[in-house]
Image (cartoon, rainbow, N blue to C red; front, side, top):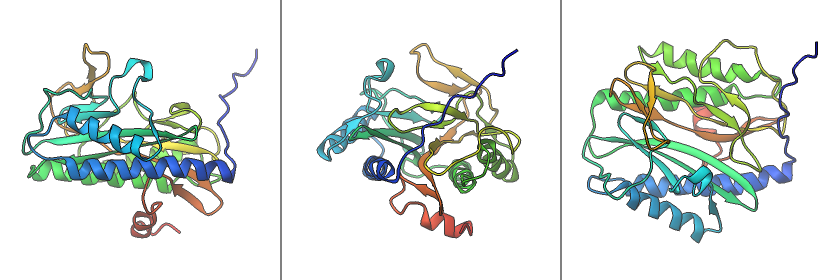
Length: 270
């Protein structure tokens, strides 16, 4: 009987991480451009065009466009859509909506991947709280991504924060992943589970961490378009994501404009 080996996790040199930082910065800045563009009356196709233009004008290539046949530069998921919403000209944002914007870019062969969820105009307090809880859970997960930790220490940190904030549905079957010369690489990073399992994190490993949290249950359904994932109860969902590198000094968030310093200070992570 042979023991099954875990897939190897790509380890980057400091020089390669700098290249990933270039891709990550482009993604982070693109998401800020999109955040400013979100308003009632704009279509998700309009937002997609804004993202593609910004990425290409700044020397990058959209990661998502053409990926397994995906037709957008971004995933644009509104309200009950959890992830992988296809940008379309007939999907018009309404005041009070929330929209998840997931973006990836390639620079010099290296990938960055990140996501934000933002309100459209004035949304409800319940939805605003969902965004706050989901984003904070992401940063708790990132803070656990230190050399010597185990992979599921990040998963546990995400789940623990969400559970401490109330009754939310933590999406299963979708999660974070390795990233580098490809957008999706081993391993999968669940957003729930016990700590102390999985590979030991080493300096030079890079991951995308991405909690998806629902106002209702955790149950999901993939639509007939083969991409869009929705909540089965029709309640809203939020999605936040960052790409980070494991460094000797702790996690370096490659898609955050400040590399995570503000959030880590808030969490008192040294």
